Length: 596
Image (cartoon, rainbow, N blue to C red):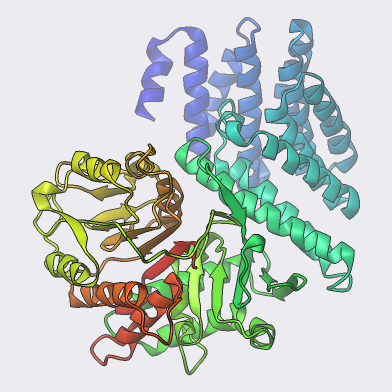
């Protein structure tokens, strides 16, 4: 804010205008409307600078901020005043022959009339803006008017045409997949404001339509498949936005292509007014379940559950919260799961659900992990999943036990690594030997199958704040991806398993688990085992030891044990120990990606 104020004093007139507009936008966003309105006359005077594309966008940006101000306080909505800001922009864009900016101004005027529920005018202006944007191939703004047209048509109860408009917006965003960062740069909209709602509102329409017909009808199945694809695309778009680049590369397959007869895939989708669940069973039509609980209640419950799970004792409130979420997400599905003899549940989690370990959901008698193996995946696609080949495994262990970079010592890491060595021959990088360069050299030197990093780390919604700690420096998620994706003649295959045994999600960050998914995808490993919170005690070392024992040295009764079942057995070992039966100790561990 101080920077904008200084720029508004010392800079050339156009820069002063842009600085004041930025200051006005920030004041509106922080709901300091009185201060913002004091600045308005100055901005309105500055708008009379010589006409250029920059002054046209200044008018559009001001109108957007005024509309946001009106959404906060309806008494501030002066439709004529906002229209008076936009109308000259349309006329001036025409005089400049700038059809792209004219399309933006027309669509913004349509937004104003949408906000005032003047549907006919809103529809007409939006259609004009869309036609013009498409004519100049401005796909980065065309999707906004397709989306806006869908909202207007929905408000007019024209549901089928609304779905068609949303489908067009979705397809445009898919075509822009590698350029989504450009979408919001001009008007400075965030991903959560200008992109994510398109996906969610489209899914809401599809799922509402699918409930009106037979669950097995072709139309209903088509709607469910499309809704599933849209949610998967949203997950991928989130990761692309997280890394500021397209991130899913390499050979992938969809979950439906995996030959598994005992695994179900569950897609919970959090909408504003309800929770929708799509269930995919082997060789069966998709099934839809609707739970009428609003987003606000879902988010509050999940936040409270997470807080209770991190306590070193089991609370009655924690069990009640765990049962509430179980009743929403699992109980309606139980007959179908039991009929198919399902043993593995794979979740494609949405929103705040990512912050809670599904293993700790509670049915009143048992935790979910006592009934099923549990895995997570960021979306429909997995890196060419295969079962772990236990012969000739190459295992690389790296860890820190000493204080480093302001982080506390990890007392039990050395024992953890020794325990793993007892199960499988391994190479070890400990303390000063564990540098980023040494890690890369070891991975390049041979075809490493398993990389186990026992060190501090943090998952954050900000990729720059997501890292694991090596001896020489924190290694960001991008750098980690570069290290682990090293490909040459010695490593034609991806890493089978990446284990991050002492990392945790950032406190107070409601989207921190996005960083966990980001690490899993960026690493390019078939599977990633990580924790939602860190435990620097014997329980962590014990669980990890048991996981490797189950996975690498299975007994004759279960020679083909999966990674997710090995994790389940390790978690049950702690759950059945009176000293570690509380979810704090066994619940945070999650397997992401290939569960085979």
